[in-house]
Image 1 (cartoon, one colour):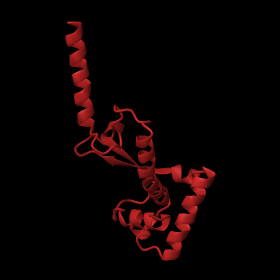
Image 2: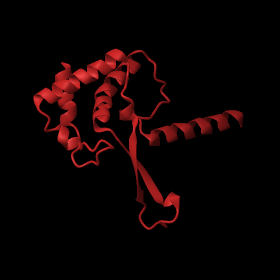
Image 3: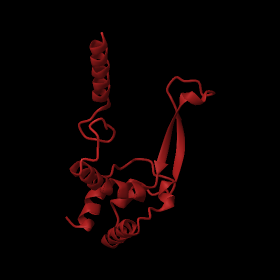
Amino acid sequence: MNQHCEVLIAIGGLKVGKAPGWNGIPEGALKHFARRAVLLLVQIFRAILLTHQFPIVWNHAQMICIIKLGKNPALSSSYRHINLLDTIGKLFEQILLPSILYEISERGLMRDEQFGFRPGHMTSLHVELFFQRITRNFSEKG
């Protein structure tokens, strides 16, 4: 699949209605990009891969705090913090992640104990394995 198609597919999969990051570009706006704008994104993404230079501004986030239901607004622990990242940077990462995960998997670089961001590796399964290991260790020492 060519890179233009990858970018179009990634844009098509974006969720409309999510809050934009500090740059103010909503994800839904990318769905209305002209062909020329998408080709420009492809060129930008290629340049990042060739130069190994991820734009620093894409690491900037706008943090918003949302009060938890029924909590005391005077306490900082009553708030849920959300970091809104740059829309174009998130798109690039979304396109890149499957390739990275494939390479890591093919080369055997990921341990079985790694559960974050892996399909079919829910946190609850990790907790279950943890308890199995503890139980096994106690029964071996008992």
